[in-house]
Image 1 (cartoon, rainbow, N blue to C red):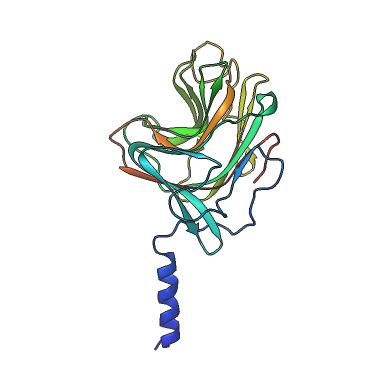
Image 2 (spheres, rainbow, N blue to C red; image 1 turned 180 degrees about the vertical axis):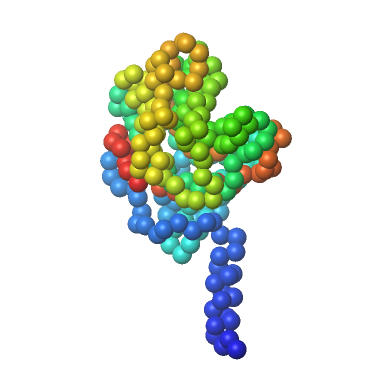
Length: 255
């Protein structure tokens, strides 16, 4: 028969984990010097965002700072149907307009309806080009079927596109590290997943998912990180995404 101490210990452990964010491996704070932007959420109170470092852009969605295990804090984005919930970095500027980004990410579930459901996790906008650049995003492809990562863009002369790749299927309910680079030399977008380069997830001036019009990066002044889905009537009907160790810098940041 289990001792009273063992029973109480199990009960306390269960109470501490119910309703908490998915735990990830504990690590020291990731925000050092020399970065253009960094947020590891460790110094923020739990609950709704309370900071002057970044803004919030939501519609049918919320952002919440939560505990993830015993030592880490993360940002939880929750949206309903085709809602959005973004951490927003305004007044951003990178020398020469070239910069790298990184985030740790866990998505509870990706959309499997409607057909061609399109989602974005990172979006960059700016001046000098009307393109909205989406280095981290993807789409549900009913013709395969499957959900795949793909670089995308919208709003510019190349139109609305997501260049998803069957070689880059999404992974649900697991922590992963995503990195990206925007480089005006060749208007290049590059992506790494868990430290491994994914050359198929690239875009450049003449190689992208749009039409034959050249793709041109804007001079980025705003970066949004979170979740948005663009079509209604989704399956599932709501989405939960946890993010940590978000950073932007002039050099590749690593995982």
